[in-house]
Image (cartoon, rainbow, N blue to C red; front, side, top):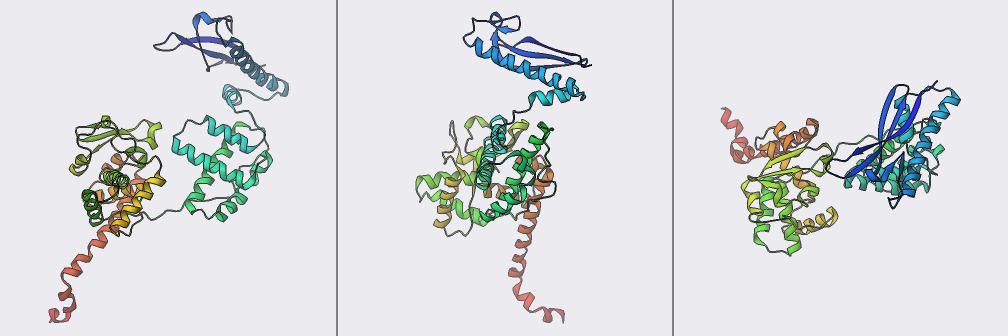
Length: 389
């Protein structure tokens, strides 16, 4: 016999006159207090109801009644079927998203509810766009067999391997959430027999000579203001390793003792702050500025387009992008004798394996520099036989 109780409690918000209504649920000796996310004043609550002195009391009470009925029905169903029910299973059933008409609609709910960065939301929306283009709509019973046709569609679109891999990664997550939240659905995960592994790409970077050429262009100021602003931010990133999402929002308040102290947007959920000492050349670029430090386009597409014009101006045969600056910083830091563990901290990487990529790139850079010995001692190499005698 399942022992069950559903009640309400109020919890005062710190530093506020408002109280949050909590569901007080007890099941077989276990207790769970879950926020209803409804806030009221203490004078607006009585006997498990929002009082009429709250302007939205009818709507709020409907939400509370609906959630209580949902909890009651979970317990009732398990009593009737005889299935075991513990608190973990109850939480899962209570908090699961309501099934909409299709997998596409379910994904839209996930995207709406997810607490992720804007860049991650952008990739989710892009994946959803391609799912709609591929399937139109997708019934739940089709989920188990969707991976292969979706892969075929993505490849016909001419997308890069790693872009395709990212879309599969998102769909893999959406399918996992669906199956975990709705165990009663007779579904097999679509990626149990299909894999789309991410391919390691060779990363590019600028050599010191190429950076100097861009600096010469920057200091000449012989270009349109929009291009000059983008080149300035790009070079600043070459000397600090910041991503576009960080340097485009960088403010003077992030600078202290010639160091950048910032919570990087990509890893903001982890609450990790990084401290990046700025070399003199980077300090001079922002000297005396207040507020927002760089005026650049709001998207990387327009930013990179302006960088291409800068490259053309000096006939630099490199595909300049905002992220190339970060690769340049990481590679040159190691090539000039920097420590990998220190670089990991400066770049805000959570895994040392990610930072090790720059070690491999720096080794390639050092290998190229060895050619200077051949140039310097060319005559002696040619006359090797005479040197042996």
